[in-house]
Image (cartoon, rainbow, N blue to C red; front, side, top):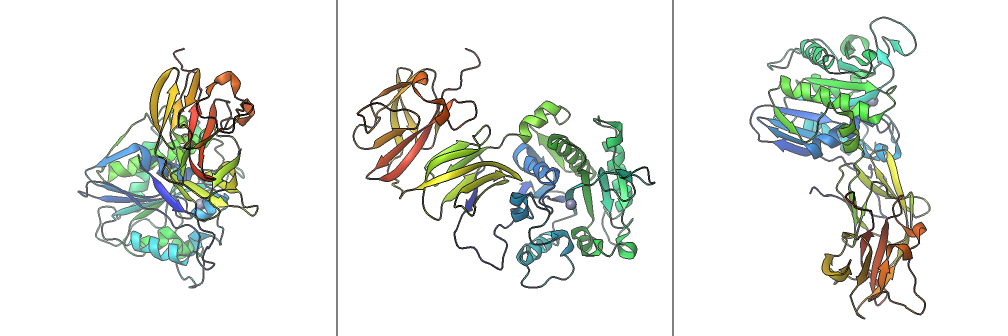
Length: 436
Ligand SMILES: [Zn+2]
């Protein structure tokens, strides 16, 4: 399983963005390399959830796919276009004290890497582009459902220098795949940046094309209400570019099956905190109280590339995936004790050994067997006169539903303490078996 680490610190450098982007490299190094950059704008989720799915669900051969899913990560977690101003207007000149300075320098270096043959910059744009004015949604000033180029051709030695021809080829093929609505069809939009668009001269793709790198922007429409639909269209567009570049790909789902795409987009993965406890983020409650954390330097590891945790002004921990706030953790501070590894317990009458941090499926009842060495606290369960809930048989109808960590009321925390230090947690999952 992929694990993405983020060390949260109370000390953040005031002159730099808090989060840097990540780069994932797939493929075998043969053939061409496509660089996909997502999340230049933090409130355009089609543009960053699509690359996160490339990372998790695609295999690449006969070439390479490099993926930046979260270029403007500070803005993504805030669901803002640009927390420190528009990142896509910082590619010409930039002051050294700009908070995005390091990010801009590093993404420029990646773009200019000699291995990169072509790059895509992913956005969600307003409306639906049309060559002539129809109304405020369908018009030449709209950006949605387009393949954007800065000019028709690049004067370089590259099989991909004919931007207009490639963009037309990609759009034509996209429009052959089943569209939800006919008016979702893709168009080519040439911004003629050099002569006509001073703003776009400051952009990522213009930086690329003026440094001999073929570049395109893909814009799905902000007027599409479903994130899943934007992601589906973005992925189809990226696949068309992979085909143009003869890079082979395999994915583990059917891209034309909207149900499957929805399922994958809504898989938020697992958060592991301080290697002591893990939470499945899908179906987690909006607030989790008395979470045993350190008062600083908590280590948050996500299986989702867009996972992030930050401390808000009330010293609560906001857990997000992309621009979606998943849950708020209300901490109770403890020192950590790290000696506990595996835990003996009886599950439905059978003795088993489980790892700290794991989720344990239980049908009817369980009993923790750690003896007197640890104090056990089953959140949502109390027994008169018992300070440690080891060696106590607990069944589903004895736990209070309002203490569950999930919205369905099936998952409960079991916490272990030693000498007032927090030793770890397991989650008991009473979700009924579908075969029952
Ligand atoms: Zn954008």
